[in-house]
Length: 416
Ligand code: ATP
Ligand code: MG
Picture 1 (spheres, protein in one colour):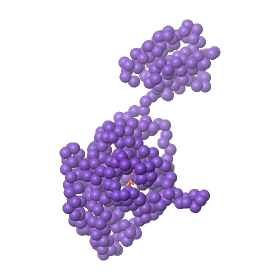
Picture 2: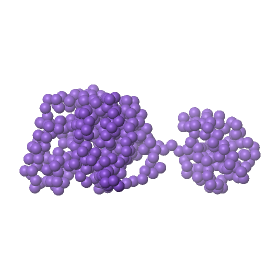
Picture 3: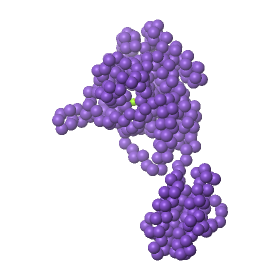
Picture 4: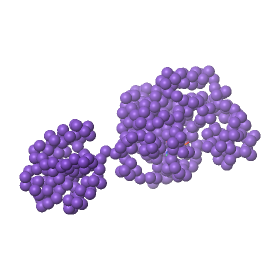
């Protein structure tokens, strides 16, 4: 579990701003749900035989004996909230969320035990149009962030009954080759053989070369859904590849699944993943409602932004240097009046005294564009000194009553 430190916060904020702006332009509303839920919610929604539920959840017993878990993903809690608050009456319903998730995975590059996801869910829309719209929305978000094109892989998982027939045949195929399976795959063979399909082990991929493909088990309705989805992606000009081995780690998916992948981050290159989960609302005790969603991994996207996007931190405009008897108090008063007059101004007032030399060092370290100097002389004359810190321009004196106008002008001219 990592701290997010101030030095990288501008990247997180830029990501969150881009998401908020883009998602809201598609009609999505934000929802915030607790990080703690009853364990059974996740066990039922995500599936007992998944890695997440089997071995990755942080679970503890509450004082009254209830089993609680830190959320390993966002969708189950959102579905619970939607049902509990009767939000489906407004369906189709477009929701998005953001926040920390917890999985006890082996920590490695791109994988931490607390990580952050931004997700979106749509309830009550069954057609492939919304599947494609969600991907257009992701694509627009990547563009807004200034990222290089990401690879989009898509697949269809069909319906639960189509998948059940396939699962049996896949299990038979793999059971006949049990000796060639790695330990993970042997463990998954009985309970969740589909998960073997997206094993990252190259040896498993060669065992799977001649395995049956799910697409051969799909009926006309599932195929039509997938075709409609792909047709719209093409209309939107979104490049994609069909990856017939793409399955998702969680049990609740059906029909469309997808991942956005980058090669710039090494092995953990999936920055956003999701799919349709038409059975999930019913599993959670609601009437059957179609649903689809995705989750982006914020840490991985922030890392990608660091590598690819020109997102700069916003340093202060002004550093207020305050030296001399009685100056600090007048200076802080001045700072307050500037903040009232110029709400967009980013101003650091010097705290804790110090000589001119010390304070100018701090001013420089702050990244501020200008130093505003108030000393005893300035105070006596009712003036301030303005000294540009980032360009080779001379300093100038200004009467205090002219300062707001001067700064307003400076902010406008430099569009800061
Ligand atoms: P993977 O195959 O990488 O384990 P997953 O299927 O477990 O992925 P999802 O549950 O779909 O992942 O989560 C969506 C996204 O959240 C992932 O694509 C990734 O960007 C991010 N993510 C998931 N787990 C972690 C983690 N432990 N640390 C950092 N980011 C994560
Ligand atoms: Mg995982």
